[in-house]
Image (cartoon, rainbow over all chains, first blue to last red; front, side, top):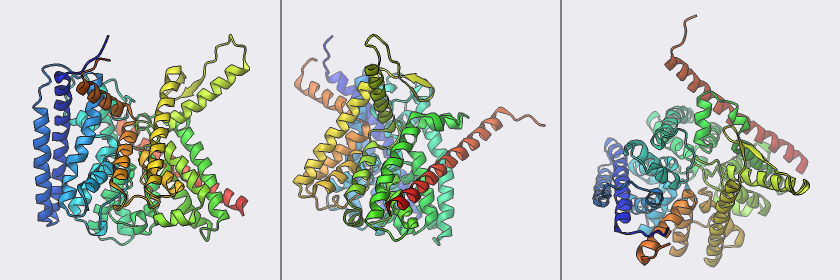
Length: 502
Length: 44
């Protein structure tokens, strides 16, 4: 049966995109309120203007009636893809009004960086931004980590069908419960639980290092949101280095590692199934790949005598490797130090760690540990098949919330997504080289944007060409949504405007 | 001994789960620290 998309399909997509944007506009009220409390009245006005603009645009789109038709799979995926792009455009307004950006493109870059939990920053003079802007930055990354569609599903939708397409379109395909709405609410409950615990712990750490109670609370709240979402934003330009605190580093390590775990894993452990932590393919693959890349990093740093002692190597080497592998992007060294001191082999290991990333259905980016585990199991299965008689059937099992048999469909899906990641990574590497950056630095920055990591080796800055910024925005968007929503959006738009049937 | 209600049991399970998860990440940190120590010695 041939498929064609007409105005009624576009109406459905615009309607739900509008509802998501209208819901997102309500988030502007949080920084508006915090600005009012802090006495930043001009900033509060900026956020109310932005709230009005987002609500107007969202309401305008939502006025397109779906004509009683329930959204199908393609509508959900296309809405997921397009709503992220529209959110990037409108959520940049508060940034632009703050005068901390050289262009609207830079503001959109930072919004996409926040929503996709990448963490690269083009904002100027971060150390002197308002409380409202810092609140907005960190809220965007916290909401983006869970997913703006997941937020909408949890708060703004009823139990009518079509929700699964929206949910999967945001790069999640793990259902904690049969109902997608229930799954979305559960994801938020887990995140809020850890938000309370984590903020308290960071608050205590902030007071312990000498911050005033209010400042310690705000920094704790923001740092927690950036940590759990594996976003990597920080309220100060020196990032985690600003705090000069082992306790802060340990807390960020704990919570960005937890943030990189699958929400289904959290749900299982919180229900009492603690063994899943040890048996799960994702945690096992994460432990193995982090250990292997860590060995390369520490070997390289030791040979080059980069740090004076073992404690410094652990606090810099291990910390940055973990920050890369969980796709968080926190740094306690300057980008130039990474480029000039770490050596090619350590940087190559960090690139590999960034590309592998965290767990599926988590706030982390990258290929995902589950796909690496599936592909390794597929290689084992093929090896066994070669060793046995041609007529024998080889069943390969893996542990993922129970023992499962590996299917060809799973292997094909995993390989396809990994291939697409590598393809857009390669395009970004070439883009960086064309902009005049050395190959290794281009590759490092390309891995950082594609895997939504946020570590920088010095490439990302407000002076890079606009074309490279747009390429990096595309990579962040595609990497975060894991391609399905991106391909669906592009296919939908292509079919709609060319009036073709497929 | 007083029997726990279902909500108390659920709360206890959640607290236990949070503690287990945090301890797991601490264990990962210790594993990484051990790897750093061993590799640093071998590389010298």
